[in-house]
Image (cartoon, rainbow, N blue to C red):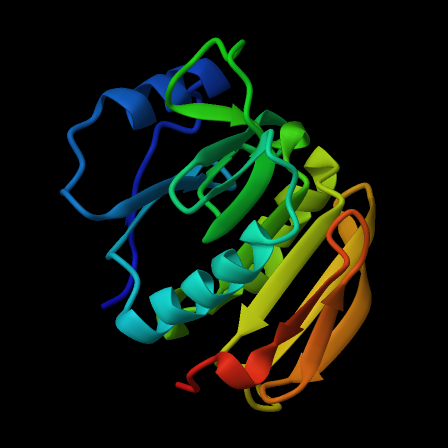
Length: 194
């Protein structure tokens, strides 16, 4: 099943777009994001997609500081890119001073992880990393199950503007290293393929 996009008034302000996103009664279990100013409603991820996210999350627990959280449903705001995005995994400090319960500023994140779905992989390969880089998220991990060269995991870093530099790419079955502050080896042989 593919994502559904909701037409919006192009004259809407960022605040109006966020209010629409927050106040609309979306289908239960769906993932609702604002990607480049367009509200996108996606079905819940498939089993294999969730297994990959769970395996990464499990490894991260062993290395993140106590005051950081590892989230699978937390939205991050990138107003400069008209984005309200929900990474498959987000690592960010846990803070009590947030003004809203619906999202946090993307600039607080230390790591964003996306696992591609066949129907909307373009967002994970193009739109989302541009927003994450623009927000200054230090590391972006793309687990691309549907890549042209087969399943791969690519770590991006050193954001400048809306572009990341690729730091490392491995095929499924190989080990990917996350640098400091994580210093973590991720064994992609644990990931189910398509």
